[in-house]
Image (cartoon, rainbow, N blue to C red; front, side, top):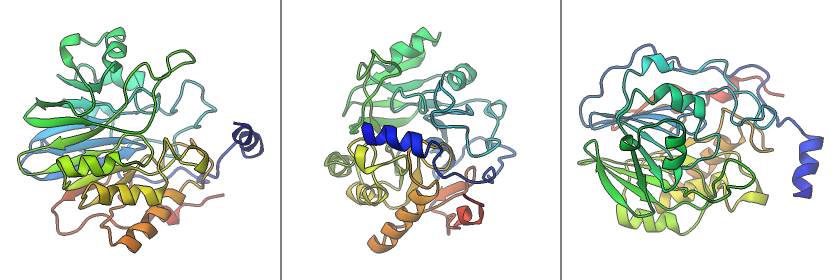
Amino acid sequence: MLTILRDLIINRRTRMPDEPISIHHIDTLLRPEGKKIKAIWLGHSSVLLEMEGKRLLLDPTFSDYPSPVPFIGGKRFSEVLPIKLEQLDYVDIVLLSHDHYDHLDYETIMQIKGKTKLFCVPSGVGRRLQKWGIDPGKIQEFGWWQEADCAGLTLACTPAQHFSGRGMFDRNKTLWCSWALIGCDKKVFFSGDGGYGSHFRQIGKKYGPFDLTLMECGQYDERWAAIHMLPEQTVQAHLDLAGRLLLPIHWAAFSLSFHYWSEPVERALKAAKDRQVRITTPRIGEPVVVGAADFPAASWWRSQRTS
């Protein structure tokens, strides 16, 4: 803690882009069709996922700040989001991994609660949603390794090595998790937050291989590697899961660590090349279609001016 406090004082602002990062704007959203998987990374860990005709919103955070205290995490790197909430006329499932502010955002939940029929959450998080006025009939809670058929998909709540809490006195009062999303012939893994561990291999053995893995890659530090993977561990976890295409998330939106803002993706790219892993690096808002002839692979962040 002393070294972290030191770094907060000496380097209060992590190296960030000098200008707002550019994004890919989404003009229209069509109703999902077919069996293909389309993932649109919305920044940080928020993902709009279309899978077998269903639309899922993963850890949606549309606010400008990742915490109730603006100096923690700072303002979002992009001036706007790739999509406005008004454009989302419906969402089949809102999926949450844990209750930290940068993954469970009150303002976002209030704006989308009327657009979905189902919130799928780890154990205990449902109580928070109920306090915010969400109909209990819309909430389904899961424990680790628990499965359920939801909107035509099988959702499996899988382990993660992390923690929970939104205040000083509620640490670990709710569960945290990752998710395996299983369709008729396609599978997606969503890591949520967490450190590297043997659970990835267990998940891969039980539910893999995965056509797409949405993997935490950012806001790490050697001092808290137990709860946030390093980029090289992100690639290894993808391999443990028997993943086929890796999409790094949890970076390029907020500054919640001390690393250079684009360091996560650079390290992940190198590790992926060394391990012969297929990795996609979309601009925020740029669709990734699994099974398409190609996928986004441009190093767009290198054109951003950075201090």
